Length: 136
Length: 321
Image 1 (cartoon, rainbow over the protein chains, first blue to last red):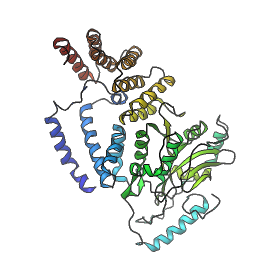
Image 2 (image 1 turned 180 degrees about the vertical axis):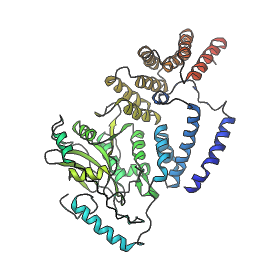
Image 3 (image 1 turned 90 degrees about the vertical axis):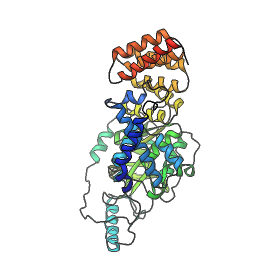
Image 4 (image 1 turned 90 degrees about the horizontal axis):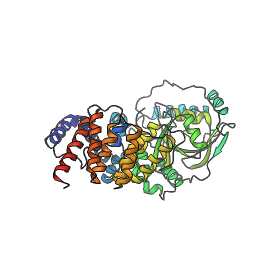
């Protein structure tokens, strides 16, 4: 993740250069057809630049999903089924995704304390952690 | 709110530092419930036809998704959904995975937020996937469940959750756990059906997702449904035209773009796309007229309109390729 993050700018520059170089040929078959996406977008400034960013973001999110163990073709189908806005939301929050399990047994004393705190909050009806706390 | 990987199942001891600042959210939900009691909602609802799958460890994402997809008559099991929804190293499922998976089965995925939308959808017979944080802010335990009903008088929500079908959960507890997940919910419907709580922009964005997933038939049905509620909606008309175009239905696309152009004479995009489908039908004089109209209207997409006009002029001069 941190590697990807640190490489983000250099990769971005490279891809922008590459795409600019081929920008004449880089266009879908009906380039001048207005997509539904553009109709729904509020701010239509810098459409071309936005497209580049989104293109980068899609490949980055896909790489991240694959790094998390999602199969390549599933990651592709996943990303392909999301709108530009949804991709942008993921990119904005990707750093805040909680990391996978760690620290098991490192804080046993704290664990006991948390156990009791959660037990009490369960009984008080604030949380729903332990199935054996009845009457919820 | 962060994008949580919903791990649901085991209480992993994953906390790092303990902030013993127990910030309970002591909002009083009772008055909220009272205001809902006097509204037009039925006092008690339970959707009988939602199947239940008990979840395996961490697998509440695939399980809840299978429940709602099967309710929409999609033939799919939680096992089928694991590679699509579950992120192995995060031991959980992300919200966007649920959204994209629904679309891959040609279903509309419409995110909702808040109590009113939830109760309205349940009252309309639509089950909802909700995200809950069963723990506390500093000790999150993310979980997906499927509310299938409620009883306002008894103050309970009825939900398929974890290993328990039709669990009756106290309203206050449900609201506390849901609030910690920012009241996030997801309605999954066969494409062409509208969520009752839908507003135009959010609904069109959800249908755009179907279009993005290349489910053009489903998206076209969904745009058509939008036009029944929001007559002459520009987004819906343009979306319908674009989907029909993608399906190779030039006549249908022409009809939608023409409708858009008539209802929204200031939308250059309608004229531009209309010009395209006319040109593809080799009706060049009409196409030329529409392309000129688009350029005259202008706007942020004007460079595209100019390109369209140039293309059509070239075709008229040199003939189609």
